[in-house]
Amino acid sequence: MNSPQQPFATIPQPRPDGTLQVTITYLQMNRAPAGSLCRSRVDDLAILRVRKPTVAFYRFLYNQVGGPWLWYERRALGDSALAAILNDSKVHVYVLYRAGAPAGYVELDYRVRDEVDLAYFGLFPEQIGMGLGPWLLGWAVETAWASGPSRLTVNTCDLDHPKAIIVYQRAGFSPYRQETCTITDPRSAPFWNQPPAGSP
Image 1 (cartoon, rainbow, N blue to C red):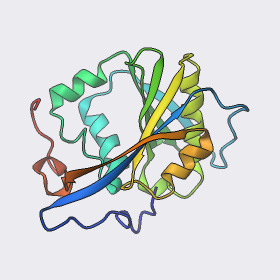
Image 2: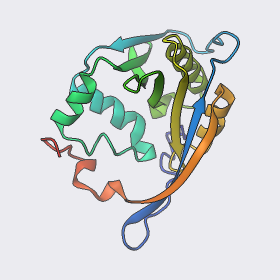
Image 3: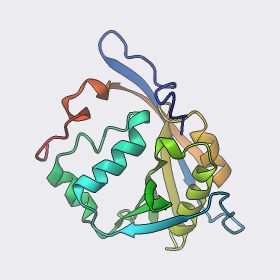
Image 4: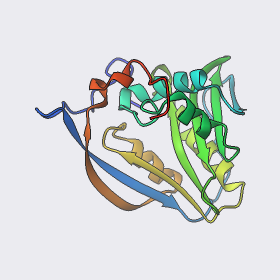
């Protein structure tokens, strides 16, 4: 959710061994928030579910939204492994359109019984700063609770926009676990610019 002019402003430089230390915060919501979805101050918006999105279209969404924040897990997946996830009827991908063009997306994962995980959520860099993020998050929360789960989960890390965790908490999520891990800087991996052709 950083500004397009400085997309990597919050990303630390890798250590001499090419690794990054990342702190992940896991959040949950155990009941639907009260009240109705607030109105967006941006007009000409539409949200459509993409049933069984193609790998190419999904990679476009994932890379555009996640690139500034070093999202790498789906980049590292081969096409067949990624297609298996996208073709699962319990994985729902929704695309936000603004004036007819993609502006962000939401992925809700229903594969754990009685839970919904907000697996991915974000905006294209040029759409950040207009108030769309909290509105889209509110829509995602409302949509997830419509299925009647006992819990809604999400996670974020310190590579994300510095306000991400605040936005999640304002939406009704509460942190319940935190862990720190070391990852190889994904920008140095071959898949960062060219996705692997097959399943790992």
